[in-house]
Length: 161
Picture 1: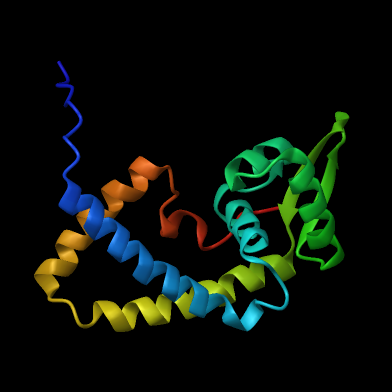
Picture 2: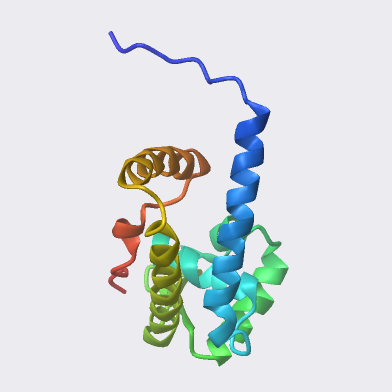
């Protein structure tokens, strides 16, 4: 019989450490986006990442994943279509069912930003002991899983469209 574990109590120093680490990661993210800042906003980039990580989406699901209203998602997708970063695809069996897919140009943008971010994160991690790196993998994997994120290796090669 599988044992069910109770959730751990939240320890304030853990929350503080995650907040501090998140500030560092936000700084790395901002730096990696600086090359494409004129092309996409942060929310538009997050939309591209959702499509890269989860594959084609219905507009309502995409809006939920990005945390915007359907109307905002529609306007944002209009802009991303004009920039040729995404495609809207109507399903043959139900033309009311529109899927948003990442274009090759959108995939290239996500890959370039990810490459820049990966290089900067590697520089930071090189300063951490091997033992602490191993602990970091375990802890961040648990954190990412709890947050509902898809592991990097599962999406970074892209979805077939």
